[in-house]
Length: 379
Image (cartoon, rainbow, N blue to C red; front, side):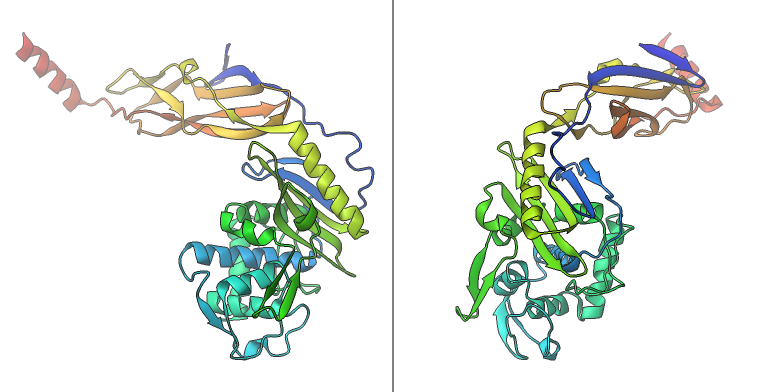
């Protein structure tokens, strides 16, 4: 169906149609300040309450620290087998530690395991200093990464997650950080460890996240609690087809409530939702007229097809394509000229540019003269 609207053509098609609904009992046992459920690959939010509320997130701050270290490993800044030496900065480290002393040397593998499983602040100090040169520079890098990810409601004061008035984040922002962590597949080996040892078996590490021990969907990430933050968890779970969902719960009242609610929310997301391609048939896109050009029309196409989350039983999204009635030369190749928007009900779930497939130069005297000469020669 085509509808002419001002200077644009609006093409509407129903490809998928659905309404996002989770089971009605999903929140009945959840008492928390904020929570969110997203699909890891698309980042699409399925459900949540006060998802952008700035809160104390406690030791969940370490997830951003781990992300920076993972990126350094991926970029070959150092390897798992590299041996790093602790500086004087580890002396008197507060909170969870593996009792490092200045001059102690451990592999990156042991240090990373100590941070992820044992929450060890002295191990993180060694990694942070090797990544950025100093703790203050590492914190700057954490905040720069948050900015690059578009996280405008997050600020880090330390790499460790000590409770203080200056640091804060939100359920939404922490879920985005977790989705980035999920891209580093080598981290899952650490996130799924519940109990292990380092320093030649002298120090035992036990994860505060019980789901690492008893939840078969578990892929990460972290649980923590303090008097200020309450009980918090960032948990990822994967269904059989590989789709992963992330739940972040902040400020819950008990540990048992936090773990049970995280499992329930992931279970319901896995059961009720799937990821679907937002495929729009390009044969519906006819060439756009070009005025004052060397060609009378130009072919157009969608710049990129996307993926979105839809209810398990549904197969359709509503799609609206907006393109101009005409273009004026010159026209560039890959020039954006419209949009393809995909809706679940009234909710926009994906949008892509409509672009030109070729260039159309402006019609000028030289071009006309060349065409006339060619015709004369052909005669």
